[in-house]
Image (cartoon, rainbow, N blue to C red; front, side, top):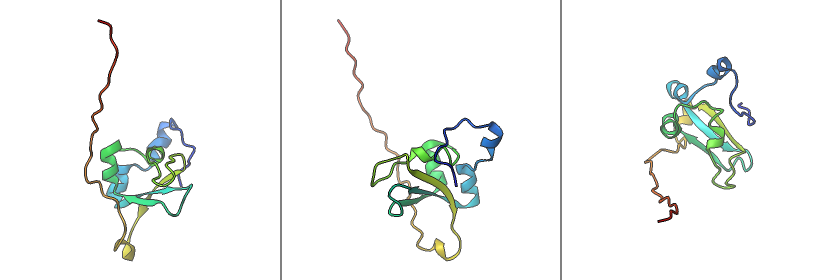
Length: 114
């Protein structure tokens, strides 16, 4: 289970051993995201390539603060892990699917003197 206190910047050899989203996709795993503050009500499952489209090929420790709980709106208690689903569990397994990525246009203003 990944550590919640991970701040990044560990030794490159150790960092290379941490499973990444592309590894999870190749192994047929799903990304399981759980809020440790209000669990077990909030648990979501995602496809690894859907998340990789948003944030790139990251390892599991870097993903923890990228998610925010829908109920308590906190991101410091999120736990991200890769889960293998086999056998009878695959039927009816709930997965969140990425439908589209929307970009929001916001105007940026600055004051100048004429």
